[in-house]
Image (cartoon, rainbow, N blue to C red; front, side, top):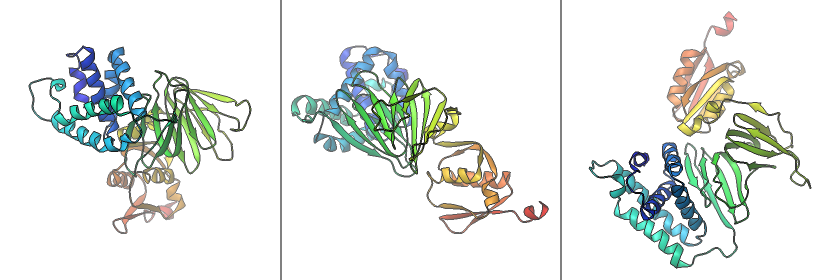
Length: 348
């Protein structure tokens, strides 16, 4: 879908922009959007204030749907797939005038259900849950227009009302690109602390109850005091800064980190800079099936730097075998063992 950005100049009337907004919404909600799609969507939204207004309107309407939402999900996925097929066909007309019939039908259905169906939330709070499997990444557009990119094995729950927007990161890792078109404060609850958006993009990672917050753009505030405190204390973080906290309540000092390393997963990669091999193996295990075992602690202490495909196990193992004093043994299709090369320990 990223191809349409270069051709967006043709339609300028309100009806065409509204339809474009719906098509973007369908694509992003389908669950099949890529990081490149999200960047293209950002470019389209930033190109004209009217683009943002129409897209936010779609999100608000979608957020007010209740029982109809599961019924439309399958149609959204089908529509997005047909869009992908149409985008790859040879054509001499603009992408905007070459829309699959199903896509236009789903857009019309979405509006018809919202306007005439009467499926409104009576509680005033829209809730939902999103998750990814191992090795999967997914972009979710929330009711307020904020975009969340879920990394592998991630689960979030959302609760949105007119006065407050809350996301609970139950496990995994996610990048939050927050919309500021309204809807009250945006907060992410992870473990026993709250991360409050100020105007930013940020990553929250929760693994084995340890939480890390990294700011990509702008700033956030991380709650320092216990949740029950009458007047919470907040630690402000800006771009390139990171903080971590434990279930015990201990909070690390703020440190500066490599954003390239912290966000490499958005491009389907993992990046390491002078990290112990044991940590590298643990990290890639989040994305890949099977098991990599280290038999000798001395091997686990070896320092590793490099960029690898998150799902490229063979490439990682080949690189390790070339660069480090180890031998890779395949026990079966699921288990790989890393051992020290013979003669290395004797020479030491």
